[in-house]
Length: 367
Ligand code: ZN
Ligand code: ZN
Image (cartoon, rainbow, N blue to C red):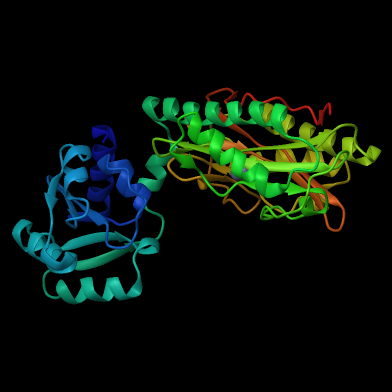
């Protein structure tokens, strides 16, 4: 746990008039407590008071929490009755106004908590948790973990490039990605790998199938290793042997240019919408923007998709903070034909970016 993050959270709580803040979103819980756990259901929650910091959990996690959540008072209520235990704590500490993450609490849980706290405290919802804002700016140790996750992903791509052959199925490739990442020290995958060959490439989130990859077609591979909780995210589009149509290389070059143009134009303080426009305008010049059906990028960290977003829908006030790590991933998807996506992770600095992804960006693998 970072003491700096706790201090910032408490300063924000004071501004909001909160006596305590309840954290139920799993990665926010990990970030603040140091206890790495993605489990939602009943795993536990944090209550941060002006002085106190209490981690409520159940007997399944008691031992690991006591080891990992340094500085937290651990409370294991009988029969997982968190809501009654929170009311007891609130009474003990005089908490009257408690903030909570409304996007990470079910209505049923909210109702139970509200009833437990009747005449003790009032609940205040926050749809965008302040902790998510804190998480956008990576601390040095987080950047190291992200770099390791990204390096494992790069090593996996290098391995795939020598291993992959025409005739393998998308699922065989999916399996090899998992096997290799684990062998290189990954915890697992950041997300289910995408291997989309030929016509499947027009679907940005295609599921790997029994289809055999072929010489001369486009193959999009989107994958990421997870390392100590931190998520890499990378896409490369490759072709085994020479492309069967000249258009494949043309579209590939346009997408690569859009990615490079965006990476070259990013800096701390740029609005998320302006960042998106860098890639979108480059594809527009190439006459391809109608086929770019998603936003340009997203933050990565304890989650594969987190803030800040590089999106045309980002409010103008949403800027990329210095020290955030985001993806840049333009794509072109032509229904019935195929698609291209290329995705790097970059660290946003004062005057530019450091490109963290090291994998090469050549389309053609000689086969
Ligand atoms: Zn991706
Ligand atoms: Zn991504």
